Image (cartoon, rainbow, N blue to C red):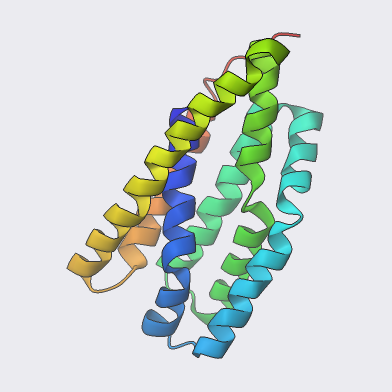
Length: 176
């Protein structure tokens, strides 16, 4: 639940503020920013399947760690001010990993809790996600306001995702 909440915190920070950061902080035109955001949407179609396959092949722990690390890289590229190329890579990485965690967490819920309790377990995990949805954009907005830009918020998001990936190391293997 904590890992899923941390994921939501960072994912919602990116989805809430990346277009504003593109336009205001990186001087990207509104049209280009909209096109890049549309690319995120198009690429995100593949994210659940891509990371679900990794999870199926190597386990939920590895699948989650991969998704979180790819997103951390996306956030770090924007935070580091890597320019236009870094922004494009960030958008691709985020799009390809956007919905990586929900599909893995749903599958893990069934594997850990069994078919009788999977829905209830996923509902509780979804409440944890909701907490992250509130905390992330609120905190990132306050941080951006106090620092005059989004670099620190995206840098913090990168750190939080890396923490979540590290916490995955402590997940036990799902019962067979």
